[in-house]
Figure 1 (cartoon, one colour):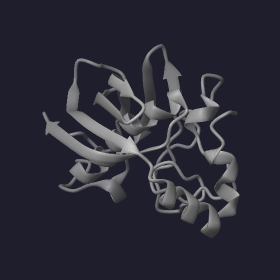
Figure 2 (figure 1 turned 120 degrees about the vertical axis):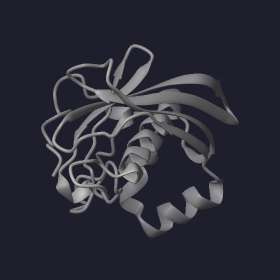
Figure 3 (figure 1 turned 30 degrees about the vertical axis):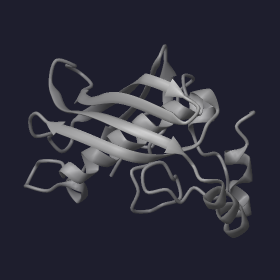
Length: 170
């Protein structure tokens, strides 16, 4: 299980985190019992989170599943758009797995923008060993498009408790 205390310190960046009543997202939702419970923070131009995976997230024994690593990168890269008060969805994500990421090791996930445009965000990121950032487990590049208005509108109809999270002026 993840450690919910990893990113609850003073560096937590509110715009990057869902503080609504919903909290159902697999990656960032605090109320999703099967989720990763990530919290994000800004460090200069980077969006950063940390994660310690347990055996429930493994593929091969003792190794985190590649899909979990992809989810970590996807969500972290996508959060960059929020720094410009824009909601986006993943259009493309390319990942290069460099070496197995072990279960039980604190990982640092970091993302930086390579292009910020109202109609397109491009970003790159990586998952590294938090204690030794020279140990790179995987790297990614992604493209993110604006959230379609009809998706936002339907979401707010279905889940009005998400309105504060969509309020990007906070």
